[in-house]
Amino acid sequence: MKFSPQQEAALKAANDWYRNGDKQVFHLFGYAGTGKTTLAKYLAENIGEDVLFAAYTGKAAHVLQTKGCTNASTIHSLIYRSRDKSKKRLEELKIELAELLVSLEDMKQEYIENHPKVRSLEREIAEEARNANQPMFVLNTESEVRNAPLVIIDECSMVDSSMGQDLLSFGTPILVLGDPAQLPPVGAAGYFTENVTPDIMLDEIHRQAKESPILRMATEVRLGNELQFGDWGEGCSVHPYGTKLSQEEVLSYDQLLVGKNKTRSAMNKRVRQFLNFDDEYPVVGDRLVCLRNNAELGLLNGAIFNVTGVDGVMDGKVHMNIRSQDNPLSGDIEVAALEQHFLGRGKELDTQYWLRSEGQEFDYGYALTVHKSQGSQWDSVCVFDESWGPKKERRRWLYTAITRAAERITVVDMHS
Image (cartoon, rainbow, N blue to C red; front, side):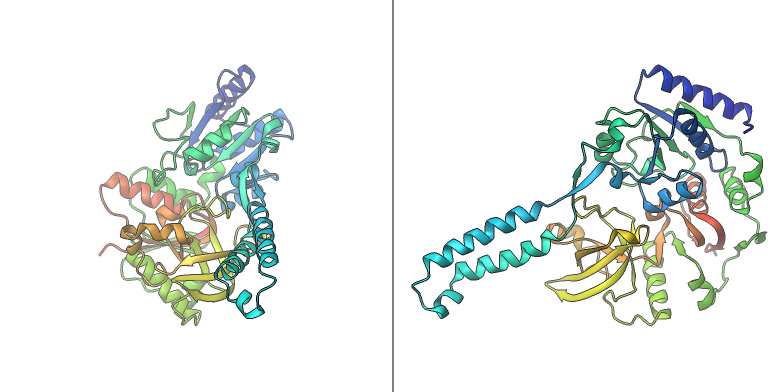
């Protein structure tokens, strides 16, 4: 394989870092189309087949797999394991109930059945029996990371401090890949990118990448140029303000991306109408996005799920079964999702924050804000360009949006 002088220098620096072993993390950053993944894969092949690839989201892990990194997985599945936290508690409650029933055996059956402690224990047992079937997760100290020669993390800006520290706890060398032209991470993410000077920064777009309409768009935006309206080839296009998309066109995209939550809500409502989903609560077949991490259930902020079953709405929570869109073979997860987001009242949780401890947070996921889409990628994307603020921030927003698409993209300018 022939590399450019800049890529050759990057490979040498990464090799030197790995051989010297003087620090645990190597930061290899570069813009879209500069060959970060290609270099990382080449480095891994020279080290050996035990090198591990991982990314924060299932989508990003799948993209790595399509690029030949066949063992790529989510960081979560790589370093955490399930545990049976509720099963022990369930057995304890059953023993307590059995002992109570023995102490009441001389009483009438009606008295026993209505005994407050009996009823309370029966409710607790039913709840723990449900929880016992839920996947709980804890750091897997026996993870294959422990003995791996190297771990390569893509889209590293998505990793928060807790997950980052867990990764480092194995003592294994870690090569992180990032793109500084993207939007900065939201919230606690950015453990490997915030206030960091990269060891290598790639800025030369390689020849094959220049032939991709998506990467040509991304490069134009990154350089501060306006996208020209019209057909960019291979199913990629840019349209002016006022362009209307048909129902068929809207439903043909894997993901819609917007800039404002108001637009996101309107788009989600519109798509659900197209799909004849009239209930304001989720129904089987709906697509949801997770809004808050839950390590014990294996839920990641920004991950997409499909609804596979709905038990009903009780006490302000939607009880349903969901399945990861990125990893459908992982099976169903039973959740109790707070109803506020589905009803357009998500801001209530900012003041009634204690409710957040009582359930999980999801919203409809047909349209996402670009911030929420970070770390993911889809084959076909439609971007409604609502970028705002200083030109530099608008540029990063649109660049991030465009690079979420792998094969086909439509950009609609929403600035009048």
